[in-house]
Amino acid sequence: MSRLNRLVPLAILLLSACGSSGPGGQGGPPGGGMPPMTVETATVEARPLANGFETVGSLRAHESVVVRPEVAGRVVKIHFAEGSRVAAGQPLFSLDASQAQASVNEAAANLNNSQRAVDRAKDLVAQKLISQADADKAVAQFGVDQARLASARAALTKMTLSAPFAGQIGLRSVSVGEFVNVGQDLVTLVQLDPIEADFSVPEAMLSQLSRGQKLGVQVDAFPGQNFEGQVLAIDPIVDANSRSIRLRAQFANPESRLMPGQFARLQLAASGDGGDALLIPEQALMQEGDNRYVYLVVSGKAKKTVVKTGRRIPGQIEIVDGIKAGDVVITAGQAKPMMYDGAAVATAPAAGTGKGG
Image (cartoon, rainbow, N blue to C red; front, side):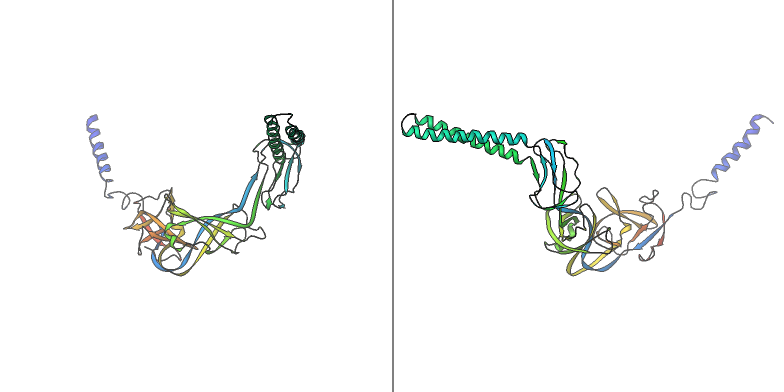
């Protein structure tokens, strides 16, 4: 048999093999491609919601300042113990004031000479022994020396750094004998009672906010304990990017248990009925930049849907725009790398979160 005759049956065999695995699943796995991804879901329902909501924020000191010198100098004394409480006006640091004190002494001596010159000039003018212009020069020099003495005294006071308000002192960053420069950080002073919390809420909740509104705060350091306070101020500007508004609350903190920088969970109380709300498990909510979104299940496929959030309650969050009652939202599996808009999914109900799709 010739070489050509031997190749013809081989070519026919290869063409048959290729044709048996084409689209439509002939000769391949049923359905072709990847199998649907299994996800957990919950059906969105409208439920009654009491007025008020939960949000998160960060604690901040009522007053806080970093103590910095206005003049350069050498530290000669530290008047506090780190972590202690200090009174308003209490000295904190003393810098070497010998040069400043010498300037005060010199200015005071010049002022005394000027005062005597003015007294003599007045007598001589009365006796018509000098002109009034000469007497005026003496008076002018007296004024200049007064200003120089005041300036020297002001410079001397800057050699002692005092607490601008009562509070708790932090950890110092300098020691006695160290030379410090203008504006160098020396220590932090904070006022912890009362303490404040900054947080944001969606603009849709603006009608439920007011100054003096009661709220509670919880922190991880004291699980199960609720600290009560009230809304201190509401920012008059709504953030155009996040569509939220900033608030500041204030809490009594006599034992200094709450500290600036702590993560805080806040519950705002309000009177009346909050009406029905569309609630989803908070783990269903995803965020990408400034956009918040969820994945819905539509006709067996995942649909990425941008939403607008409202109030928070423990474990759930209100959706005010983007979904409707009856929609099926993915609560687990949506964060997997292979998830995307249009991905085939097989749904399974999440325990305790509602009916599956």
